[in-house]
Image (cartoon, rainbow, N blue to C red; front, side, top):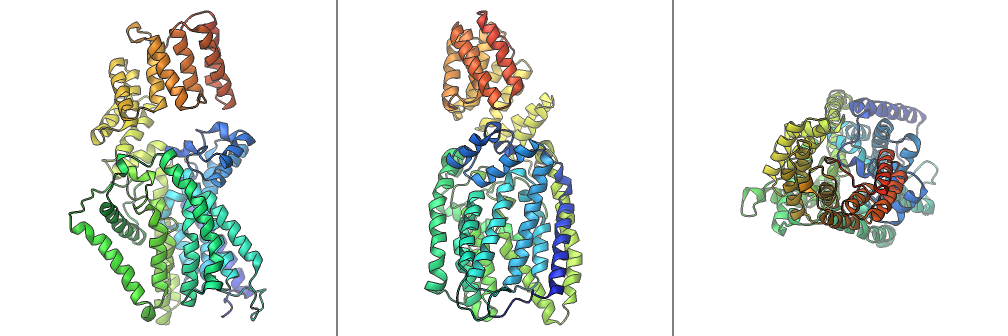
Length: 595
């Protein structure tokens, strides 16, 4: 086996310079989103979990309780915990870290391809760093899990490649038959880190074998398969936890996932071509793409899976004539995408069958293949300098597209407004844009968007609830109650809608809407659903007890709500509950229009 041609001092110097230039170019391309705020479910990892971020007890829960976070990715949660310790909820450092992690992944990708002697490795790393499809992973704070996991994922491949001697590094004797055990231990550790950052790393054991097959043309039991077995055991053992959390805690079950197996096949085939198309021609990118209408009786829809299967088969059959590289790259692309091709329930499928951040890892295969083919072609024509010309044209175009795509992450309002411009029938975009402008006081415009969301999706619980909140601001209490009740009919265990109804029954200034007994029933149910750990809901229980004339219980509930709010750093809510305590001690109920 040949020594990689990257050991000369001149090459190393140029490598460092290129690496620094790549990092600088990546930061420049992502500049528009660096000062962006938190969007959509960023609160599930940041502002919505202050109790987990405040001290070491929260950090312990992240690791020991699978449902403490939105998903069981404790290493990602730990990075957000550290962020909070250093800069609270100042979003600039969060964004910079995401982009730097993305740039780091691009550098490791480049180094890995050099080790594997893939032509144009430097250009492949740059394409990955600047490609606009990656913006959803690097520009969205929540997707820290994606970029962090990929850094460890690629690090695992580097360490494992050294262990299996897919290449010879500088300090290894050329003829030494031994394998560095430290590299194997490091690979296992890095794989564990990748998995604890995001479960999409589960594909890595199969990728280890794929790379060995690609480089050697066969798999040997003792040399290749046996060392990979601990990785498979780790992936299978750890994979059960996030799979359970995705279904039972995140909520990836119900009518949105009632899809027949043939329809899932249609999704898979079309998704493969969709992602490949966006990587080749990255235009009309969208945060939430339209959800396809599936028809297993439609012949044209079967063209996608048939063409995908045919392509995979053709590359396999042609491996001896054209080489194993194309087959390995496309197998990597399809195999790492498998969890999000529709055969498994993933929560994002509720809104769209495809998301840009789902192809983040998988894109590496097609990028390496595409750039490698271009580099080999120009080399065969004896014009290697043409590759630099190609890069000079392509990289600035990709950088500009990334710059433009980053703009949508400036704030939550811009994100959903841009999404609506590209996907006007997205029920979640109408709902979330309405919620954003409702907070700015644009009540009528918000109501129109909530109504449009319900027109597209009549059983949309969030839109019913938000429309109820908007109608309350206009004083239309009966209409608001009707929408809250419609939401409860669809989702009887929604604690926050139960809380809204309980508050209306407990504290409404209009006597005809107040009902102490009903308020207590609704508030107790909401508290039970949140294990009495949500200060706002416990505070509602206090108001409900007061309306029912149970003032001692009202004081106790308000004291508990105050303690919870202080523990979570919610000072305004703590002060409000302190006022309620004083009021209830005078045996008076609380009156307020609505929250």
